[in-house]
Image (tube, rainbow, N blue to C red; front, side):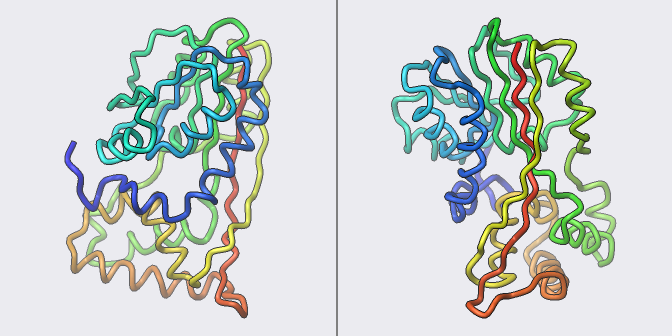
Length: 259
């Protein structure tokens, strides 16, 4: 895969690395990761979540997997002693058994959770844990405005059907996983990330995630026009505090499923 502006750019993603890494720390705090001897980071990105995982499971053999060569290159540079693989996490062939499978802010991009989640549990050792964190923010203004901007412009046909994988409720994930697991723990947390730079900072945040599929289909001129219209919507939806900061509400769902 070649690097392009439409790809998961490591540089863009890590602009807000501290904010993006905090949820994986909260997730790993609930996994007893220190007991793991084999672990995999599915959707490892530029290696920030993998580096966090190492801190919790220093004795484990860890593998990182991502479908972006740009991310894999960045992760290898960051953690040269860790094994990283370029691959599609929706069809990841890892046989295991693994003591811990970590998927931090990655599975929301992957379809068919009804099949994928039980399949991942099947790769765990007895007592092993599937630890998942996914954004649960499709109803937030930033995402609603992406969809509205996509549907209301000359790019309408280009962007038809461009959206993130359908999310499920906590009840649905619990019901899906419980028949395969000894224990399933599901919770939801809303972070309020302080972004310095007003709504422009909100745009930069989502350029590394939610905006990516939309901008990938637009040329340079269309991208500029799309972002101008999106920015106008954000200005009406978010309050810029006196110091120029926007507090970006960001709900996330967490799942720790123990086999």
